[in-house]
Structure formats: C-alpha cells, structure tokens
Length: 566
Image 1 (cartoon, rainbow, N blue to C red):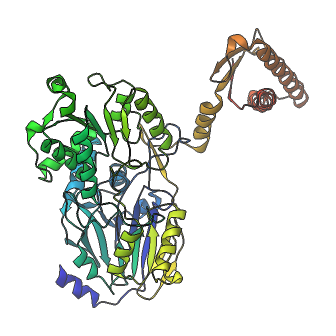
Image 2: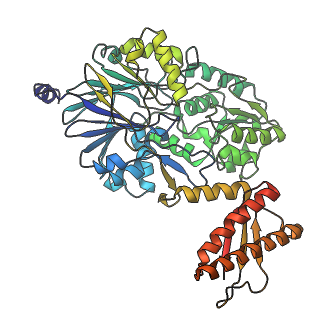
Image 3: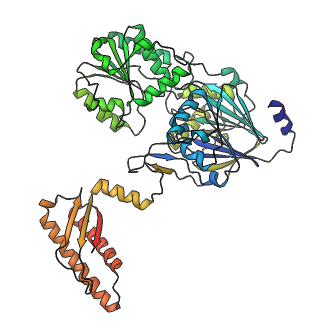
C-alpha cells in the first residue's frame, strides 16, 4: 500500500480537495464530514442526534444526504472514529442510500454496528472491515491512517487522511488519560510523528470552556470502590452502556469486595456481551446474578448496574424510579450512583427521575458530590496537549455548538495559533483545502433528515407545527351539516375537543363559537350569491381564520382547529 501511494504522489497534484463539515457543528451529536477529490469521496463518521422536544413524533435526526446521494458513485468508504451513536447511529439509514460503501471501524464499534444493521436487516449487504491502531487504507489517491486515542469506549481513533493536495487530521473524541482503567493509552508517539505534516486539523470542542485536565478513570475507580465498600445496603450504579471501562471498574470492584452484580438494561447487557467476546473484559460468570437470585444475598452484597442515567423514559433506572420494573423495586436506603454527566437538554428529565428516587428514600450520589464520573472528552489541558503533539498548520474546531467552537478558537489563540489559521465552520460548509490555502467554498444542503418509527420521515413543517400546537394548546373540532341544495346549516353544530376545553363546563363558550360560525356562514352565503359560485373550501378557510382569532381573543390560546363539513 505504501509503495502505491508514493507512486501516485508523483502524478500532477490537483489544486485542492474538498472538505465538507456536513453536520455536528450546531450541536453535540450527528457527527459527519466528508473529503472529496476528483475521483472519490470518503466519509468520516455517520452519527445521529436526538431531537429537541418540539419535534414531536421524531425519534432521531441524521445528516442530510442530498449531495452525497447525487454523488454516490464516488462514495467509496465510511471511516468510523468510534462506536458511540453520535458517530455510527445514522449508518442503517445512510448505507442503503449510498449504495452500501465499505465501512471501516474498530472491533468494538464494528460489533455495535453489526447489531444495528441486524435490526434493520441490512447486515448481509454491508461490507464491514475491522481496523486496528495504525491500520492504513488506500482509497484512490487518499490514504487513511487510524491512530489510537483514549475516549470512554474501547477502540477509539483519530484519523489522518493524506491527499495529493494536502493532509487532513480528524481528532475524533478523545481525552488524555495516562492511567486508563482498562484500555490502551493514546498513541502519543504516532501523534507526535505527524508534526509538520498536517495542513488542517479538525479538533473536537465539547469541553472547550472547561479549564483543567480531564479526570482519570483510575481516580473514578478509587471513589467507586470506597462507595461500594462503605454501603450498608444495595448499591445501584447508572451509567452509559457504551462506557465499558466504567462498567468493568464497577464489576471488578464488586468482585474484589465479594459482592454480586445484577445487570439491568438490554443495551448494557449487549455491551457486556460484546466486551467479553472481544476479551476486553475478563470477569467470572459467577459474579453475575439474575433478578431471581436477589433474595439469596444480603442487600450489602448486591450491586445493580443499569442504564438510564439521562432520565430516558424507558431507561432501567427511570423505570425503577417509577416502580415499573416487575422484578426489582427500589428500597429505602439504597445507594444510587449516577456515574455519568448530564447531557445538555436532559437536565429536566434527570431532575424528575432523581426527585422520584429521593422520595423513595435512596441515598443519591452524583458527580457534583463525588468523583463518580470521568468525561470522555478532553478539557482545555487535554486539547492543548493534543495541539502541542501534532502542531497543525491550520485548525478547524468541530463537534459542538458555535459557542463551544468559538471558545476552542480562543483557546488555540491563547496557545500561540494565529487567528487567521483557525477556521470556524458550519453544517454543510464546503472548504477547499491545499497545502498553502484553506478557502471557504459554497455550502451544500445540511438541514437534518428526520427519522420516525417508519424510517426516513417525509413530514413537512405543517405537520410538525400541527403537532406542536396540539401539544401546547390542544384541538377543537366543529362538525357542520350543510344542505346539499341550499348550503344552509342543518341541525345543531357538533363540537369535540381534546386538550383545549372541558366540554361539560364550557357551554357558554361553545354557544359563542356557534354564533360566530353562523355569522361567518351567512357572510359566505351572501358573497357566494353575488359571485354566483359556492366554494366550500373558501368557507372552511374563512371560518378557520375567524374562529382562531376569536378563540385567542377569548382564551389567549391557539388550539388546532378542525372543521368537518357534512
């Protein structure tokens, strides 16, 4: 491979390659970028994000594929930095639309991807290639190298892409941890070897406003051991299923203290299974018990490891807090440890869940009280260490909101980088990259694609707006019977309401609405006779506008209005 690459470098060098930061630059999630030369396109990561509350009925958001779909004949491969959903979650939707290009990923990410692709019944169509540290892949005139880094999931990588026009580095998600609990350290030597060779480095910005250095997993393990040792009752530890190092630390510590471990949550059990198959963790089977075994051991000998630290509706801890697990119930005196950070946007759900737990009499411990979590994203000193190791010519902060990336830019300036060598990008922004120039090009469509229970959703803005109105103000339906010949109203107007008014106590308001309907109807009939043309749709449109204004004036609310003409 190396010989081939050196041979193609002798050809005429094109003026630039295109880099597109397709998504992941307006939020934390939905990470996806691609590089394009004359013959080929390679994609870096294919993540999803979870929608804000106002996108009712939408499960996920994935990158916009309009440009890539039009150019799918050039898309050769998708390279994955690690196995979190914000980097792999869009693959089941992206792969069919792009003609199933090859996917390159580490062994742990590959197993997680396989699991997802099985669910969508496309695993047999996918070419999934497992990579290791320092694996090199040749795609036409581009060479891709995987460089091992420490994150919060096994087999995480930075990716270095060499092209004839210039070299581009993707940091991926990383932290600097000299004493990781159960994984390899970052490949510092390989990163230092890139000094002077990187024309543009894309570096994550998640914790750009957090001073200091990230906590080591070893420090977390020491705290967890003390919390497990001193507990007089059961200990319930909630964490992310993908945070295998943490799961390993808790389980190993429980084994050391002669305690038993119960796993709750399908994704957590899957993560354990994959980690065991890959020999990432080695723990005796006798350590683990089922819910049927709980009564066989005293409470102070039981550790329950579960998902749901973000207050997810169907997360294991959330179900426990609501008493909805059929086999395991919270007991007063249980020590509950939230071994995770609060993802922005989840604060309310987490707060509701912890309120329920406290009411049940648990002892609640979070990272605000003790060191029970270590972020997988480097703080300022971690990012500075990465910067000093690779010394790129240009930097592009990615992976985060504009504010996060802005603070990252300020950090780099403080560390000696020139301001005009730091480029703030946007979703869908295309850049022309060469050894001597980084230039902003024409942006492409980047509006997120919505995924609902049926797959890629074609819901328009009108439907989403209707759902929002229904959720906030409810709806009122008016059923009006018109004479086929005269178009006069026959019989009583019937009403139905959901989430707007209580019908039995709103007779006066309904009578007023009825009078307004007759008024609009009489006006419509009069206009129709003048124009010698009866148009039911015009009546419905005029009535909807009039009733909407009337109801807002009377109630200061704007329910969804449905008009049924019989």
